[in-house]
Amino acid sequence: MLLVGDDWASDHHDVELMDETGKRLAKARLPEGITGITRLHAMIGEYLGDDEDTEVRIGIETDRGPWVAALIAAGYTVYAVNPLQAARFRERRSVSGAKSDAADAHSLADMVRTDAHQLRVVAGDSVDAQAVKVVARMHKTMIWERTRHTQRLKHALREYFPAAIEAFDDLDAPDSLELLGKAPDPQTAARLSINQVKAALKRAGRRGDLDARAAAIRAVLRSEQLGRAPVITAAYAAGTRATIAVLMTLDAQVKALHSEVEAHFGRHPDAEIIGSQPGLGMILGARVLAEFGDDHARYATAKSRKNYAATSPITRASGKSKVVVARFVHQDRLVDALLTQAFCALKASPGARAYYDKQRARGLNHSAALRHVANRLVGILHGCLKTRTLYNETTAWAAHCQAAATAA
Image 1 (tube, rainbow, N blue to C red):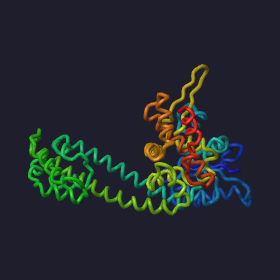
Image 2: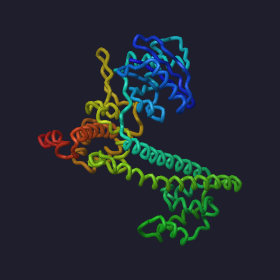
Image 3: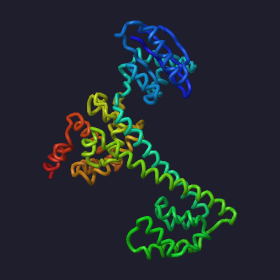
Image 4: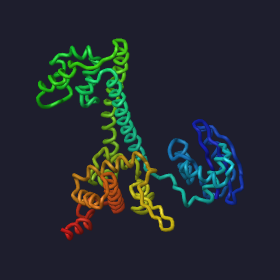
């Protein structure tokens, strides 16, 4: 066995080769890119020789990028070491607090030598799943960015134009952005006509009594409000125009990526099974697939999938003390998708609703009960993927439905 520690940076990699006894064989600083990976292959090949049966284990604090893909393609066993794990391992070896890139490479090599059974091998996801992950993550990132810019816009309007917040209850809606773009200050907004407001509402696809809605917006914009000095108002208005331009661009790109996510997810072999789960449509289903991956050997049991999802609780027991708490260290994107699925499933699945009500009856608050539903749904998804079967409401919630019927 040949062990390799790879401490990576944006432009270089500090690597160390180690044998099974912990003896350092070689170390080097390699440049990022094809030149560096070629030199690493040469270093490994020098110590492997003609022995093709020797396993090469590599520890690195990332699981993505061209460098990692090249390591996997070469047939090495690559372990994506959590930086927190690496830091704790380093503290075991030294209490002085000394740290360097070369020393980190040594620690990573030593870690895969002694603690490989505690580490996770980089998942062997298909290229289709990786493509879904790219577009699904970018789509969600754009949505988060749109929300951040909307909050910035609201904060700015509160400083000089509070009437706009009252007039437009949905600041990132197309009609709100159009009208604020035309009239980003109180004086210009007060001059907007009923027809201008109504036309913007029509272009945004609003329904109902547009005349009454337009009149209500115009009345608020013309009402007396506290204001700022003209020069300050003009400065804020310039910033508002810029923020609106960003929001309109983000909105257009979110819509474009929405189509890309649906197209990539629809082509994946697991799409039908994932899409059959309650609360999962094309977009949420794509996010769940992206974060779980499609390497079916990665999760040996439903419990391991739940632990990765961070929906299962953790127990802290010592002596007579025993506390069960939620996992606060988690993958934000996956937890966001699963909790959203659980919330949607309360309407789509009678079984999920009954299970949620059962948790509330135990005294749990909404968030905790929803997390229990999400945890149960992860287990159901695991079973469906393992058996290659679609979701079935009766099968999924049979025990809980029977218990509820018995209690009734």
